[in-house]
Amino acid sequence: MRIAIVVVVLAVAWIGVRGLLAQRHLTAAKADLAAAKEALLGRELADADRLIGDAGKETSAARGLTTDPLWRAAGHVPLLGATLAEAADVARGADVVARTVLPPAFAAARELDPKALRAADGTIDVAVLRQAQPAVDQATAAGVAALAGLADAPRRGVLWPVSEAADDLRTQARDLADALRGVQRGLRIAPALLGADRPRRYFVLIQQNSEARGTGGLPGGFAILTADKGRLRVTNQGSNADLQDGELPPPPGVPADYVQRYRGDGVFDRWVNVNLSPDLPVVARVIADRWRHQAGQRVDGVITVDSQALRDILRGSPPIPVPGAAPLTPANIVDYLAIGQYRDFAAPDGSSSGVDRSAERKQLLETIARAATSRLVNGGGSTLELMRGIADAVGSGHLRMGSDDPALAPGLREAGIDGALPSGPGPVAYAVLFNSSGGKLEYFLDRSIRYEAGACTGARRKSSITVELTNRAPDGLPAYLYNPYHLPGITGTGNRVTVTVYATRGAKLTKAVIDGKPLGTQDGAAGYLNAFTEAGLPAWSTRVDLPSGPTRRLVLTLDEPVSPGAARVPEQPLPRALARRVEVPTC
Image 1 (cartoon, rainbow, N blue to C red):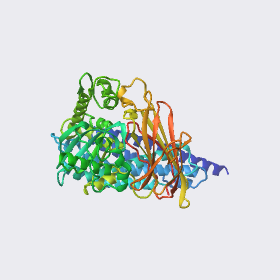
Image 2: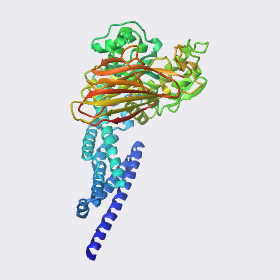
Image 3: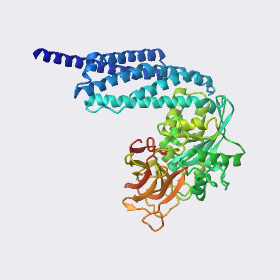
Image 4: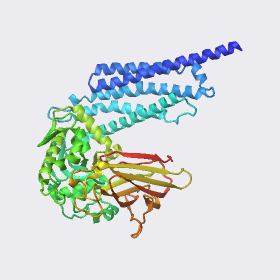
């Protein structure tokens, strides 16, 4: 008996020692990979190669320590076995990522040398992008395979430190695979975007997302961008005052439900409302048609950007001088465009100011837009910072693009940057706002959405979508930021928005309440709810007053079909990020 006890103690000690050693190796690998990333960003390529090699050695050692016969045998022991098996999976997964996924990813990053990618005049070398494609394809395939190997749900009964490490690894592997997919899709579409096969022309819509519209914000300015064999040029630029209003018929290809929903709101006769819908591919079609009528030019796509995107694009560029104010930098440009410009210039008629300096203010906005487009099309500054800035703007949704060009549209859709309403089967919950007061208080708006649905059994299930909105506008703001047209019912720094909620195809509304009070679909109820369909999605909208401070809560209870796939909860690109909570099983 004593001998048996001694053997057990020694076995446990052996496993414990090897587990501690494995943990140390994984910790060292994590540090090596962090250092390798910084070395690569600093273009210290020899150091990056050495560090990623060192990380692979560490993960290999950790994997070896957790795969010997004694460790595997202990994996079948009750209580302790689940933890040991999970620890072995962590070591194996980390080793796969370090030695199979990251080397080709780093190789692709080496190919995408900013100094070789962009010439002194700003021309982008399309050949460099193509040369990086094979390594990115290899890394992406390895990353997807690694993620699939970790996709099983965590084991039950795993001790907390190992369970946490496993969760971290799964999250990191998922983020890495998503990032590699994004780079892969970007490299595939980049040559056509840059005019490698033929010159292309784009309409760039600069949005003020402190006054919400479906695609992001109020049209504030524009630029015409051309691309020809990697050379980008701006051929026209101006403010919204240079965009001509006038009623036009809906262009070919605009769906009938879109016309029915938005025609009465002026989307076909006023630029200020051209983007009330969040469905960017259709909005882009309308914008392209309006520009063709105004300027006689056809465009191959529409790019939407806002102040957050301008901030990202301006990284690594010189400050923009502002008369009588601090120069604009990425650190202060978002706040200035949301608030500062209205403090520095008297507001248009309708505010408490008696002087109209809106023309001067719009001239300054043109100067800012010209600086941003110059940063994009001309040489100078940090190309690496520009690349990272564009990637961040695209990833956050503050830079999007819609196009009917058959060489572009599929890639934009696959990359998820075309701003289209969700298509095909699958659960949907999408809350979209547009400003209904003329003010600019969405800069201070907190948003959250909660989507809950029942089990996958049966043909239909109960679900609910809860949208919460909190106006946090402080006192002392410039008068033009709130209720500039003196609309009734808005006091102080109050706001008013129209909220639209899109739901799963085939969903039916069973109940709607706001702050506990019922909303009806007919006038005379406690509140009015408008029902419509867009892009095949059922949708409901209502106007909501938002006094500063209290949270308003809209809850829609639905009867929806059980639909295959994971829940899709898109985010409208507004100044503050959307808080999401999704409790919907994947069917």
